[in-house]
Length: 167
Ligand code: IDP
Ligand code: MG
Image (cartoon, rainbow, N blue to C red; front, top):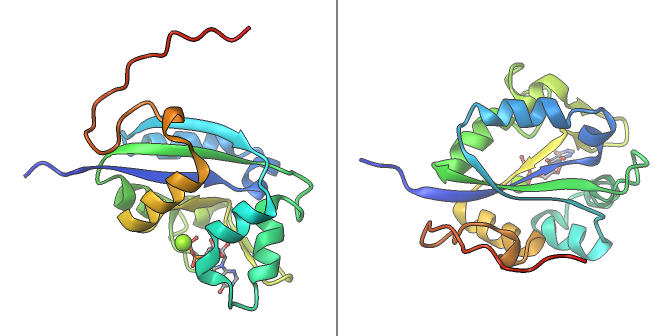
């Protein structure tokens, strides 16, 4: 049976950018043979950070987590946001990323290779990846507007290029 095409959100977190891991992470993710259908650099607002991590708002590390994703811990006020798309995208990307806790993650995974646990209490695991289809849809809607994504995620068809030229 042919697997279903899915879209999933990937964020290269501020520690990944500070450690110059963008190339390494994108190379690892290319092993999935998925397509990148959207990409940009984002300066993360407190509102976006809190909405993205709203499922963790009661955790003791929530405040630190918001500082982390906003770049306050790494003096890098940005993340790289991407949408990967293709068969079983969510599971494939999640497997390559590894477990949330970098010490428990497979040492060959992205988080196992590059993540660390800090004394501040938050896991600095260099990458965010969506963990379910429902979460992916919600998160992609938070980080991207539909016209920034070059496929129609529902139908799987490519969009027509817009005849717009930036002056
Ligand atoms: P995920 O990123 O693997 O989906 P979530 O539970 O959604 O894991 O947590 C979001 C982020 O919050 C993690 O990637 C990590 O940076 C941080 N985090 C999650 N659980 C803990 C914890 O128990 N201690 C410290 N940081 C955590
Ligand atoms: Mg999560």
